[in-house]
Image (cartoon, rainbow, N blue to C red; front, side):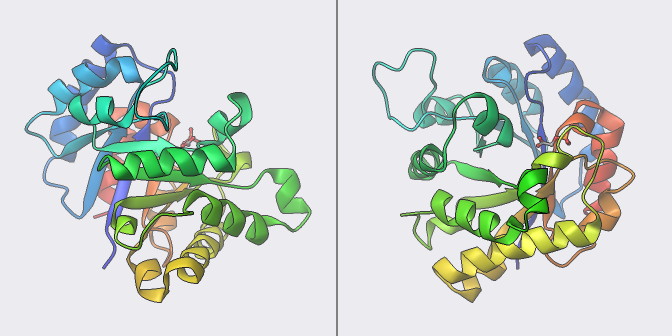
Length: 251
Ligand code: PGA
């Protein structure tokens, strides 16, 4: 059966000292909540402090991006091997902010996914439609296309380390959450795309998160849906009580 994964995405927030303090605050609040994996994806510079602070707890540390090349002349970039050695277990790939502001394409999302999986990281691959695309009626087509592009050349075996986050762009950081039915439907399109590529068994076992203004108030309803296997949480992952309440909702 598929595993719930509650993952925070801190984006460009928190210094290393702040990361340490917030994780120390969160540790007792999420301790023993074993019905889901608890992950915090943090800025690269925070990783050593976050890994150190999370030691001995059930909080796992993720990165927010990874480069697709193993090494070389790519100034400013960070490889999958570097992340692994630093103690990172998860990595967010293809977040809509990276697609929107940093020229991320479906091709580079795919290359990053392959690099992460080949290094043994768990990939949290983000897909999602804009409001305009939704209003034009392209949500299903787009979600399936983005999912299939991201997973090109991934093996069925590697799918065990793939999590897909359906994040409608219009719901990210806006306070406008998708309704539970919209989240379930979007996640269902993603699962259908996985089934078309890898078969029903792999699709049934794949964790599909919802993300976009998920918080302590709406998490229980979103997570009650058949196709919603967790959350990718931005704003609410910067507040220990709110994040812990979302983890609790997944129990
Ligand atoms: P939000 O961000 O929870 O602040 O909407 C979600 C995300 O971008 O992953």
